[in-house]
Image (tube, rainbow, N blue to C red):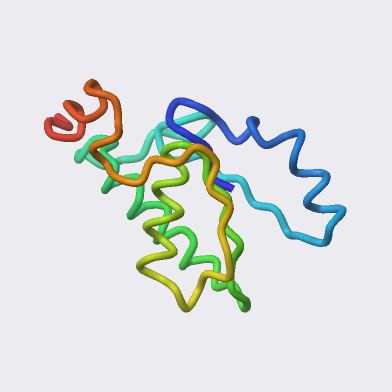
Length: 118
């Protein structure tokens, strides 16, 4: 489960027990530089591309033995949607909650930061 920009994995605290009771293994990471995560060592800033690549590399490092159900909210929806599009063989299904479908939907400040991460 991937939450939106400027949120934390705590956003899923009320949904997690229900999903576990339905037999799901639940993982709700905080993206680097957001929520309770540490700030990464990247000098590239926290652009969408940096956040997406960090997420994709992290998922791949977990070596799941079955396809994933991805849940994404807002910017997390854009991240999970991109992961599913680039990794259809690793994705079973998705739940998108008020997602962005394109980086251009980010608010003007975030688009500005993405163009000038330094």
